[in-house]
Length: 409
Image (cartoon, rainbow, N blue to C red; front, top):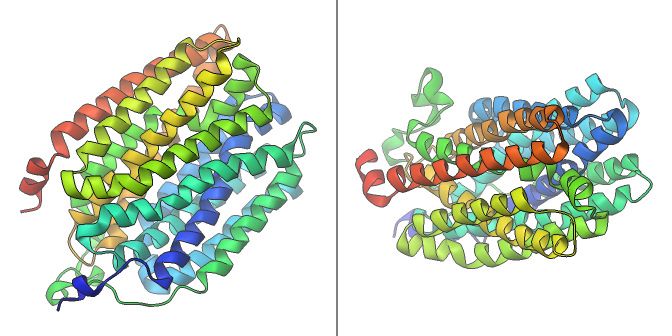
């Protein structure tokens, strides 16, 4: 019986990697939700809020690109531990050195930590999950981001409170990411997928091929474009809801709770559907949900209908993200050679972060420089809608099973 048939992703390593990723996701969601209002509160600048996101993603991109050989050298387990502690240290800089340059440096360090943690955790999952169950395995692994979507913003917004207690929120964030480091210590070196005749081992590759998996590039680029289309929601939804819709912190946190419930439902059933019928059955509806969300945001105004529609957007956001991310991640891993899971995941997350890197900084400037904040948001969401439609067309053309079969021959 082959090693593949014996594998199960319900192992200690799978669970611990998922919990470590949960801690990283909760910390990231806490900061994503509050740093734009934090910058607006401290420096009265949405551009700075965008830059804090951009610097985070610069660090994440660099380390996603360089992480594969590093992870293979010091092990996935200790990569998670070391870079979780680095993330913690960077978070504490917000408390002790609350200056613009220092916070940008802190975000760069956090991005470095996130880049390595994400690739290492994803690679643990890919190693212990059979290819024919990859969508299901990635979907279950992604439940961590689902719960993070619910609890991260809620914890952060309640920690900040009405008195703008950002330092309290940073302390909580540091504690959460430290828990991720402790959990990772329990990851075991279990069975991994066999590499046929050793031909695909990392050391057999040279130059850029050691860092980038070519066969993972198309789904990675596609998700980059998709991620760019809703980056404005990730970065500016909290301050948008406050300024344009007149919602308070408790109401805004409900957006993420609704999103997490929607994500949970899709994660539980979407992976099996994608494994059976192909990833496009999840990818196309996921894109359409984000398009609908962005169109609602364009026309949404303060009033009695604002809050229910805002919550509907939360559901659309949850469905769209949960449907597309694991499906495209699974394509990137499955279409790559065996033994290259770390590099395939590194490629996927390296490319993914480009989407939010440029869009967050550009959209922040658009909103700041527009004649009114309302116009700035409308232009941002209109461009995002066009980007999302373009991403969906690319997926239909290049990520269908026939096109993938030709590329993997």
